[in-house]
Length: 81
Image (cartoon, rainbow, N blue to C red; front, side):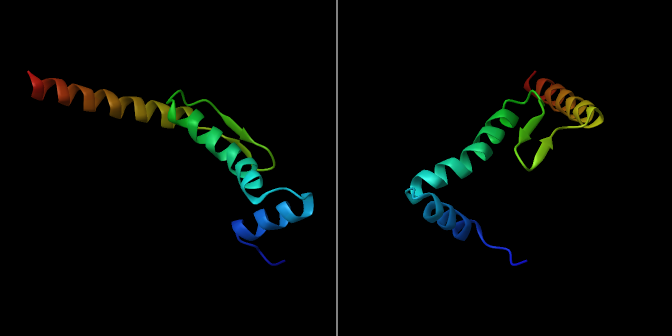
């Protein structure tokens, strides 16, 4: 199987469905933009991308990130006082 680049796939979809290239790009990239937006909120909520699966953070990783954040905040407070 030959792998195609993103642009070739988008072009193929636009041609097959008789849609403008810009519209197909919006459709293709929208799910990734939504996933990035969800993840950037910092709530560590799982995000499902159709045909790609569920992306989530393991509880142990969340705990480690929380601890690291608390240490950074404590250091900032001690240097500001």
